[in-house]
Length: 252
Image 1 (cartoon, rainbow, N blue to C red):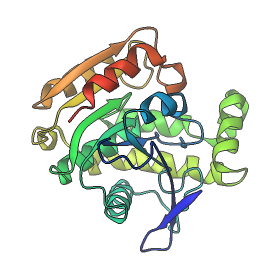
Image 2: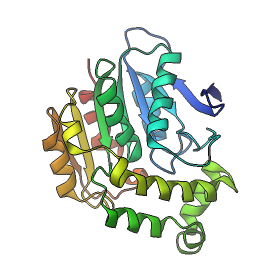
Image 3: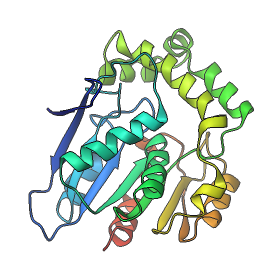
Image 4: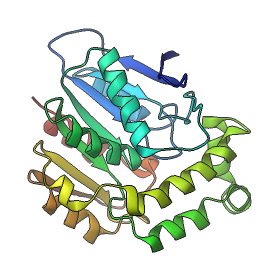
C-alpha cells in the first residue's frame, strides 16, 4: 500500500506496476464510482504491465483512500489526480477510466491537454439529467441495496469497509446529483484534442447507446466502441476484444 497525502490530509492510495523502463508509456487506470482498485481493472494488470508503466488509484473516499471532508466533490477528485501525477513526476500518460473514472479522464484531458495522450472511457455516464440523477439517488440507498442486491453490498463491504461503504453510497448519490448542474457540458469537451475512445456495452443499464454515440461525435477525435453482450459492471467486460483495442489505442 502506497499513499500520497492531499493538502487536506486525505491519504490517496495508489499502486504502480510495470517497472521503471523509460521506454514504456504511463497508463493510468481509474475505477468507477463505488469502485476500488482491489476489484476493478485487475484482469488487465498482467497483460498491460508488459507494455505500460501502470498507475492504479483509489479515488478519494474509495477503497484504501481516505476523505477528510464530509462530501465527495468531482472537482476535488480531479485535483487529487493532477497533484498525484505531479508528485510522481508523470508528465505524459494514457488514461483508461471506467464509469466515473472515464468522466475524470475527460476532466484531465480538458485541463491538462499537454499531459493526456489518449483517453479510453468505458461505461461513462456523461449526460446527467435531473431524472437520471433522481433514479440514481433512489438506487443508492444502503438499506435497499443490502436487501435487494446483497452480493453487490457484500462487495462494497469488502472494497470499502463495513461502515465506510454506507457513508460512501450516500455521498455517491449526492455526487451524481451535483453533476446535473455542476458537471461537464458538451460544449466544453469539443475542446479536447487528444484521441478519445468511448466504449460502452450493448446492454449497459446506465449509459444508453445513443448517448455514447452522441458523445463520441462531440469529441473532435472521438471514436465509438460497442462491446457485445456487456452490461454496465466492469466485471462483465471480457479481456477480448477490449484488451487488444486498448493496446492498439494507447500508443504514443
